[in-house]
Length: 192
Image 1 (spheres, rainbow, N blue to C red):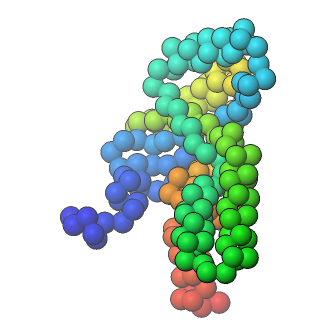
Image 2 (cartoon, rainbow, N blue to C red):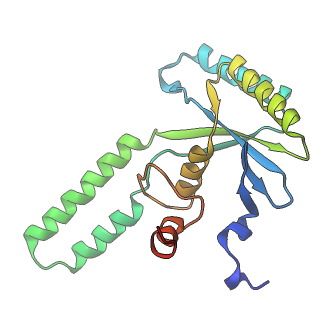
């Protein structure tokens, strides 16, 4: 298959959204748990050591647990590069100053949001019945919570939001389509 004719979905090995998360091609089903972050900058050394110990215990009890950490907010680097290029091309000093102020404003916002991270635990399910996966995921969620990591199972909208941010989509839409362009197709090609 030519790379140029391959969809993003195929390149990623994603087949479809599933009851528990995402069904992949050949790597099982991925179930996601959103973890409530802890601000360790306000914790004592003893509390941080205890958090580390709890994470170690969790990973010992569930060694196939995968960890995902990503920015929980947009990245403004492209906007700042644009402002730099625009400022260099600008001849009007007042506009140049405004462009510089805009860049400083984006720097300030990005600095405020630099600690905004989102953490997820990922579990791969392989050839398990619906009952087995349901029981297993409930057990894992309980285990995560017992170790002091507040979590909840990610639903379809959570997974779509995280994947869209991972691939650089900076939209604040409430509802993302399952398929890119789905709304446009329904609007233009499906009669009422």
